[in-house]
Length: 567
Image (cartoon, rainbow, N blue to C red; front, side, top):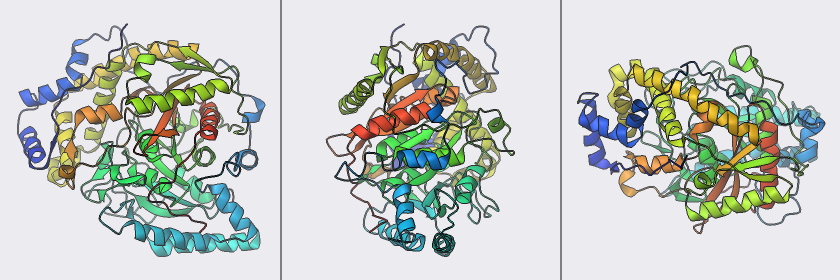
């Protein structure tokens, strides 16, 4: 079967034209010619006309495939042993620029070089500085300085007594405003939600706080998560630290930018259609979307329940792995999280990938900007140099995956906002209103039909993942585009660009598979490029170990907007 992800044709609109389009869609029949045309351009009409055969509509992620190998003993590590094995691996000897990781901070706390209070003060000063000038980064939606300093002071006292809580004590962490943090409203990037502050943290955020993390506040995001640029009309466009004229990717724009700017080595995001992996790639940091249910969704806004994943960003693979170790695992408040095997951690110092089979579907892999393809090709060659076997594979029917994911995620998001849409539709941003109007043109039959295709398409991936351990692709089809002037501040609609950015993201969400984005190079503008590695359910350990191999080879560059927390 031939490669079927053909380019999408749809008009780009912004400014007054976008407003007129939104009003027209909201006041026309859901089955109007305009709505049908836009849905057709996204592949919905083609999916409607295709048969799902006898497959059930009851596919429940994650997609389970028998592993080709059993985890080795070195993957059964405690957090402390893990940090001893990988903290600072190959970084101190590399020379040049390196991000400050959690281990760098805790090492400085332990030897008295600095304190959590001093670091917190630097963070607050850096955030204030990042808001100045003609292109403010707009990383945070809300930050309570006194709360941040109080957390840091308590951590400073623990370090002074020689009694830190754990591997993250005193380390600053930022939280996407899709997850609850006590004392802060959860706005979802809107001006509609979050009328009252949350009384408790989301379970995965609480896990980080219990290890001593200093929670910095709530970060910016694409409204409701319905976009992949980071342009928020209410809180400002979140800007890329590598070039503030460019997008961050989304929807977890703020968490990725916070790590890239040096404001924290770990942050918390959420991923329903690439929303961790895409901004990680565009901001030059590491982002992990774990297996469906691996990280508890308790306390995460339920906007897209069957494709949603909370997960960590890290300045390094070690930081991302540490965040994952503290966030993942069974949670009594989340039944799905309890149906998981024990969380395992790899020895990142072990770069031997002998026996690991990496699948590459060449027409898909190469369907990105040339510089993206070149950097990602070079990085998989490094995996091969470490012992991995590169295997040519074929993955049929990628276009139906794109359409089935679109129907699933926008249907679930519109359903989650149904009460607010009935009374406060005009208070959403224009691009969100446009997407919600198109969701209104979908039917219950469309949603059920998409789920039946989801069950059918999963069979293709079972076959492929029985042949290989990992599927490698670029993380996005392009590097970060610049913010168009006419899109600020009210947004734009650009379906071809959106689908280019999301080209490699949807399958891992649709089937609940783990995926990681690791930096692997830069384009000629100095903008980061990410390599995506996808694996079988619950094999995050292998993804992290392979990402560490790529990281040891790649040379990081300093972002234009970056602050050194250690001075």
